[in-house]
Length: 350
Length: 152
Image 1 (cartoon, rainbow over the protein chains, first blue to last red):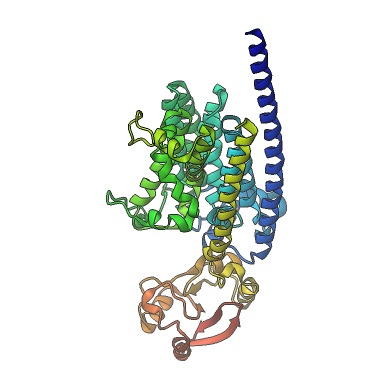
Image 2: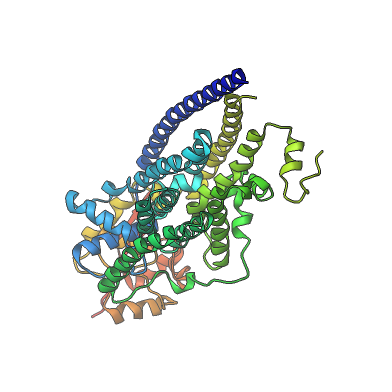
């Protein structure tokens, strides 16, 4: 008996060693991936001869904030223009100096996303989700533009990192990240706020939510107040772009393969597997995906594929979940499905 | 199957999925922005700089489209003539607001009613009321700078 215990202990120890060795390997692969990503950004940034339309607006607003003149478009979120103005205070006004801004936030997103998922889901899973997210065509393209897409993605992922933490100070930071998501792209704050609400529910930890609210309110209030003092009003979008309807548009579903690639076909599978719901850790990703899809599909007057950027991590997480679950169960696919599919009663197996 | 084997299998599955995704991304990446987008136009900013030099410092530019680009890169305020629907109404819009300069991106108009006026033929038709100061051919655009004619 004692002999068996010692052998099991040795096997466990070896498994742990193997696991940590794999983690180290995936960390190295992740660093190599970051290098490739940075090279890709550098190549793409070097091709950019002018900003996009919205980018020119953010540059104009930055100039206006710096000069104390009327904003070019008052409904634009201010954070990107504040950052540009901050850079120009030291370098002088030159749009090429702020070209890498989005790429810096995208790189930060990759690091935070990887670190968030690695501890709980393992390095390989984290690497898979991160690589799929950062290599997504929409995410990659807008990471090379003077736009708010990757900045808001960064703050949404930072919110996720903070709400997954066990430290109460991080929950306060989660609130600050929700506020900064608001400042970087107004509607994405709904996604960040949902992350805090659902994670609090999943962990039955309402202290987390109150701390997050305490962190978010001052930041949101400060942003609204500063913009109000500057413009005399506070507007988050053009009226024509804010027509929400209960008749959801199929636009994002119809374009799902174009947006996320063939991997999106695995997402419905995640929703019909028991394992997806048995782990409370996954709740936040389910909510992130479902809420975002409903929100953007309800806005039928302004549909763009880039609006899917901020919840792309949730899509990739849900897509890889069945793969990870199948590998973990170590059984033939039919047996796995018969055990895991939610519409097959548990006692029936093939 | 050991833990390492499990991870190898997951690595294999992830690799296949990531590779398929990368292939999809590369295909999609070229479609996110048109290859003829202004972001790839190497001579666009130079044209804007020249326009800036050719008009008086405080002049407001009336533009057929691209107001944010024109405003930022020329340093001049720009206005899209919303409400104008013809050559005459455009003229009225400009004289009413005391605007003298018109920048036309040939074939492109943010005001749908002025689409034909800012077409290749339409811009020629403008010349009886506007003096063509300069035309700029960039990589993907033809830009005309007009000044309102003054009749004594």
